[in-house]
Length: 153
Image (cartoon, rainbow, N blue to C red; front, side, top):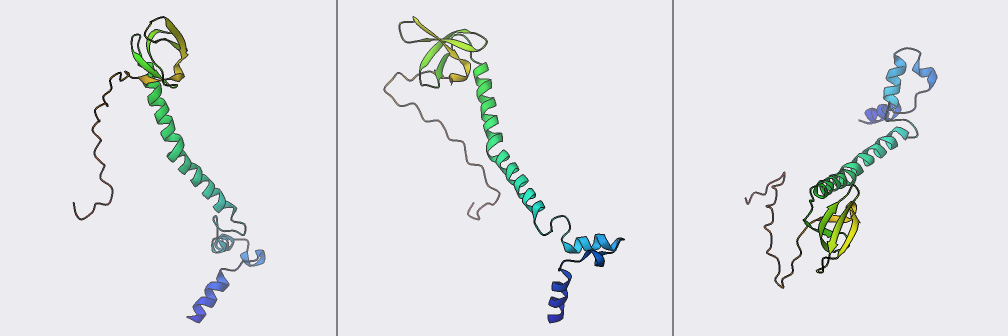
């Protein structure tokens, strides 16, 4: 056992260029020396970690944000004249006209205040709740079953 440990320790040491040789023995020595992921500075391992972190960040933050923005843009494109909308600042109003870059929204009860609002500032279609009653609770979607099921089910 002691001889095996000594052999493994000796074979993992750095091989000098004279010992490598000029033929296929050089490639075998490079593989024994660590090959692509080895090396004395570990630069390639660091590059692999950085690429992995960028991929993780993309799938956890950028991709869901783009999906949400796309859904919100589709919802804004579906707004027609006469729809009641909610702006990002919390005002409800009725759309009276649509231009290329904005909605002309009528605010208030007197029907005289018409304000052009940039399309990106409209949150979506929504009717205001003008009663004192709480809105009915929506049914919650059932939980998705996980990968590992408990034995109690």
